[in-house]
Every structure is written in C-alpha cells, then in structure tokens.
Length: 416
Image (cartoon, rainbow, N blue to C red; front, side, top):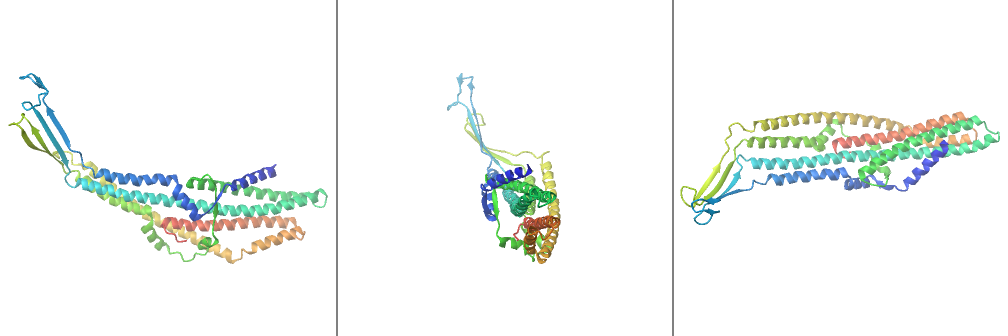
C-alpha cells in the first residue's frame, strides 16, 4: 500500500514538474520586480507623496462676497440694484506669513525621499525572501535527486532478492530489512518534497506566476559563495550598512523630515493676514465707496503650542530609534559574519577531506553487496550513513549560501 501511494505521489510530482519554468536567479528576480503585487502597491506611496507636494503648493482661493438689496420700502421695489439702488461687493485673499507655506512644501518634499527609501527597503526584504526560497528549492531538489537514485537502487535489490527469497535462496528477513531501508528513503523523499512544495508556493506568490519555478544555478555562481575567503571584517560591513541600508537611511531622512515638521509647526504660530477690496454703492460714508480691507487673528491663546510639542517629541523619538537601528545593525552583522565564517570553515574542512570519494565508495559498496562480498547489515548501515552524510553536505552548502545572502541583505551590497 505504501509503495503504491509513493509511486502515485511520485507520478504527481513528475507531472507537476512539466508545468515548471526553468529560471536563473537573475531571470527570477526580473519577473519578481515586474509582477510582485506588494511592490506594485508600494509604488503608489511614492505617487501619494508627490501629490502631497502639489497640494502643499496650493494657496487658499480668493474669497468673494456680495450684498444686494432685497426690498426698497420707500420706493416699494424688490431687488433694487440699479443706479439708484444698493449693492456691495468684496474680494479677500489669505496671505501666509512666517514662511509657513514654504515650510509646508519643504516638509511634503521630504516625505518623497522617505517613501522611496521605504519602497527600496520593501524591495530589499522581498528580494532576500525570494533568493532564500530560490536556493532552498534548488538544494532541496538536489536532495530529491540523491534520494531518488538510492530508492531506485534499493528497490531493484528488493525486487531481485524478493524473487530469490520466494525460491528459498535468500532469507526473508533480509528482504524485509531492504524493504525497511526503502521505506525510510521514501519517507525522506516525501518530507523533502513537502519542503519544495512550500518553497514553490512562496516563489509563485512572489512572482505572481501560475507555473512553478525550476531553479537553474550556474556552478560558477555557487563557487563565489563556497570559495569566498576575503570578506570584509565586521566593522567594515557596518560602515557599508550605514551607507547603503535603506532601513537605516530612512531613519536619517525621517529625522530631517521631523526637523522640517517642527519648523513648519513653529511657523504656524505666526498669524496670517487677510487682504481684500470692497465696493459699496450707497451704504458707505459716500456713494460708490471703494475700501481696502484687512484682517489678522489675535494670537491670544492659540500659539500652536501643542503641535509644536508633538513635533519636538517625534523628532527626539526618531533620533533614539536611529541609535537603536545602529545597535541592531551592528548585532545583526556580527552574528551573520560569525555564522558565515563558522560555516565557511567547516565546509572547507569537509571539502579538503575529500567528498569526491563518497560516490566512489557508494558504487563500490553497492557492487560488492550485489556480489555478496559484504553482509546485508554492512550494506544497510553504509546506505543509511551515506544518505545522511550526502543530505547533510547538501544542507551545509545551502546554509553557507543563505548565510552569505543574509550578509548581502543587511549591508545591501552584493559581496558574493
């Protein structure tokens, strides 16, 4: 029953593979940048910030008012607005004082840079997630390939020795042991395939693609990770991050923006001036009177003190968050650098010990077991050890690359 279920799943995964598209990492990133819905939505924040600048530049519209005679009792006339009647007109314009309109525009402009940096930060985070899923999928497929090869060999042995056991030429318990080895391999296959399915789901969502993505990786690109031994020290990496990390740079721009906000709020405490011109046909001191009007609010109890204090508090808060971000970056870089150097050292030691002998020994053990030169116990013990060692080596390569990607992500510089 288990064998039938396994082959049905294997058939399903094989059919699914035909609907996959072969993409390199750069091709995958191109599709991601073009189609990712979160990125497309975030771009509108930049447009919103630019629109706020346009809105900030707009002055208040002139205000026009009028007064028309409704009833003239002495002459018993309605709407007497002719030459002997009465009408009054006025036009007023609000004039901003204290450079408050200029300060408002400068603050609005500062939000554009922040929106652009936030977009860059989202792009950086999503690209990091994409590259993680890409490499996870690639190395998990290598594990699948290795497990499939072993399953094919072991199932061939199970078939042969089952026939021999039926003829009484081979102990049935040995066949069961081989079947148990095959079951373990198939269980590992299903576990790894589940991991691939999860990564494929992530890649589809991030690229807005209906097809799966089969990662195509150049060996030379991998060697850039495996053979890298001249990575800058942690202090140099921190300096790179302070120059290039958009999350940190956004704090600097938010501080600048908050300074402009404080300046704007202080300028709002300056009263504005309303100027105007009015015409009165008969209601003034003399006929057809033209007047100059003006108005200034008296700053008795509203000097915008509350908003000024809010702006000051926001500025101080952002300064503290900037210092906190530096601490976070330093800690992240030190941890990522230590993780990468440890993995690099261990991987180099393993490679120098001669992993190329794995396949030679594997083929030799398989042939010797088929020739009955070694016992079943020796064969199964070796197969289990070989399988775990191979999978661990693939996992080590994957983790080494992901640790390098983590450093790239933090400093926002492609060091690998």
